Length: 279
Length: 279
Image 1 (cartoon, rainbow over the protein chains, first blue to last red):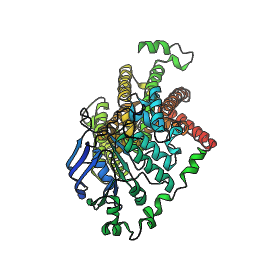
Image 2: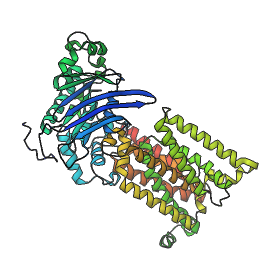
Image 3: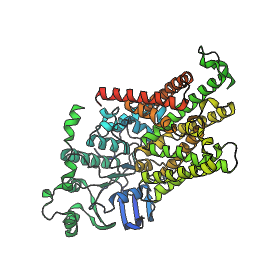
Image 4: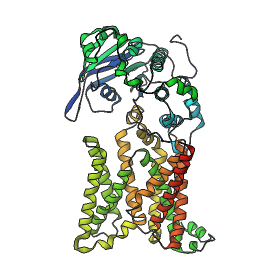
């Protein structure tokens, strides 16, 4: 779909400017007396999908949380908005997991109502928000999940629900923290394609943390390689993945196709599709 | 309030003829739902141990009040509870020690200090009424105070509930929605401390936490969706409260503990229902 096509469901007008930008200037984070991030400089442009890769403990999640303002930091984070009336950017965030337990009564609808409206959730759902939530879910083909409890969802379903939530209302910047965990190969590819499509359609800046290198390499415009809290390499996915330092650190030295993605750990759970067919 | 006593006097039951039972009934109708509402959030937040610690900390509050020569140690209890709530919140934030340990250590310290101060000169027995609580001695001014507390909690629940809810789901997600997570957490911790401290003279240190946790835990076994969760918890607390009060009248037992026995029975039934449903 061309970027200019208006979608009646979207609360924001579509403006493709290519000028709005999120800049991190010399950002550093110290936690518990240890430097977790240092000297991070990066730009995220709208309509651009940037993948953030690196070994475990490199500081990927810390970088996302810093951008959310969740951690004390040094350096500057600047947002040059595409709408003059918005000083602060709207950030959509897709976490790795939720803190709810399996029997939690929280439903998908609860999540949407709690996040979007000020009407106290414990008093009930307002009809308008139900419709809004349904529209949000439809955007990622998850409309039937509206009344499901969070604990009943498969990994892939939860991931799409959280994406839909992050996109309602449409953000300026979308941050995804390893949304791949617990999802099978084909589900993951579809998920990345969905994100890629959405950022074109809605002109989002996307920063995506993932261990699935072939998956993100296929959709990302740019790739950042983070190690020991520093950005070591930045560029087109093919260039970054060809860097010997990246290859050695992430443990592959031949063709990417043969790479055991994420050590195979993301595929420990059953196939996502079977579960959805039943649901 | 006089309206209440006029109405309660017309209840067609023997126990309702007594003034102290009418007061106790009103107290339970205030304390029950109040604790149920807070308890749901306590359970969702996995803070059951924290609220237990708040109950025990009251012992030190009582001791401080007694040493200061106050006739009514309630004020000292509230102040000490709030100080301890903020201390735990702060230590949790800045230290890497697990929350359980922080709470355990603080509770052990508070209980020991309280017992040492109160037992000086062999006078601990004078304070044992705080361990069990006495619903039947509540006076009208004290009822009015409980009413104000209920209004205050209701006010917070009407204005800030969704933010608190999102924090229990995922802190970073809440942050991305513009919620001041630390403030919300501190506010909730203080609210629990205040409610626990103010309810202890009537309910008792030993069972106050059950009043918070049990209705919520029962509702959690049955509820689908957050509105249902809260509605069921309040309903269970009301039924258990009235049943416990009436039975304690005829059995000549401590009211708070009798209420808790009913709550525990409801919890067992809800667990059974859950198991039979196969969830």
